[in-house]
Length: 586
Image 1 (cartoon, rainbow, N blue to C red):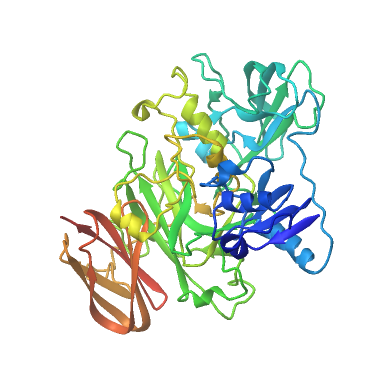
Image 2 (cartoon, one colour; image 1 turned 90 degrees about the horizontal axis):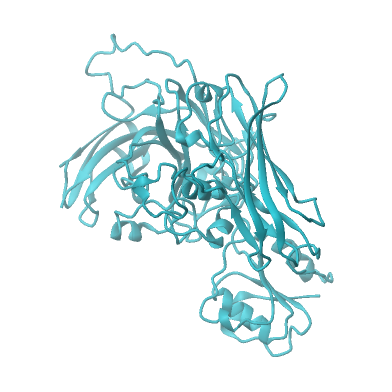
């Protein structure tokens, strides 16, 4: 049986002793610490405590807090808000709810199996085939390995993990590309999970792949042991694709031509933020044609109420050689303003898959009408400016963490757990998110970007189950379609004076600045609302200001509290946008 306890009650009033006797306590995440909730359930006689996430999405890591160590006699687990709402809805309707929580595993004496989401994947779910036709950069190398669990009650013996990579060209037959084996030997039951990656100098689990045509890669992992009483969890396959023109970090629905969004995630503080995926381009020349994504307001309100638009950005990453993304290493090279139509309920409503096609170049020499071209041998951050109180559609299933772990700790010829970052050529970024709000950004501007969302510990320095749990499925469903034959724009007839003229024309002075900047803005027609958004050198949202009923103005922005560095100023008005750069000096 289940008994329901609200977080507000638990946070302020202790549960009466025996009030949950023999029942499983279901309590929503919220005001009080996880450990406090669990202790209240234990003291009330509950046999287990289930905490329901209070924001959309799956479970998150639960810190014990100050009272957690006192929870000694009951299990504590978290479930998603979606599942919890269904359970609690039935409970409140008077339906008797039964819930079973079993011990680890399936009750077998000998049982090894994969941890859900524990396979080492590839760089992305899909990249154009021409990216794999010549050479293999480090970003595209496969890294065999997986997180394997001992679900049984006895230690495993003769344990190994084998992998086979196959490629099936479109319309053709599968061909085996590579095999590898990681040998463990004994698997002590006391250590329930082991990351099986080969760290020896003779390792064969880091290797190149190639494709000259579109098709599908299938990487099949098999766990082998002397004795295993349950083989149903010993084989698993990771699949990714060589496409015609698609980059997608998360899974993609090729039939309906859109990314899968099975999870929506946002900032718990409801603050505006920027989130996106890192893509590596091996062979340049193509131009950004269409970016697909999804936003949810957790309601049926049309997106048009978000000031009528949303910005997307493309950043080029030029590393200084240490493989760590630092302030100033990102440069915006393209942007797109996606305007929303309140009358188009079938397209622009919350949760719809949206397309952003009007991409414009940014930077020296960028001319109006030019395509946003991708360069060879370059990392790019494709990012979405997520408005306050909105959520980003995510893959919800795939987990890049095992791959990142493997790349960090399996460099051929390097001892495991080497902390010398400047010597680690296999360090890789999956997606970027900043956990702090704007006040944290201003106060601590030189922090490196956290590699994955909602992690207090940077993967570079810490690898643990909290990181793994919080990254499963957290791949933003932001896919990119490229045009491999972009048109060449002839500007010879434009004239110098009109070559860069747009509907939003702005200059910034003084630049560099110290305490303030003045934006001199000229519009073709009066705008009901003008927004001025500042983004820092790590692609982090800093601040946003607005003006009303503007055709021409000089808008002053205080920069005295901004750290020294380079910034992008994005000005949105009348469905158009312009990007200008400025520098703050101290």
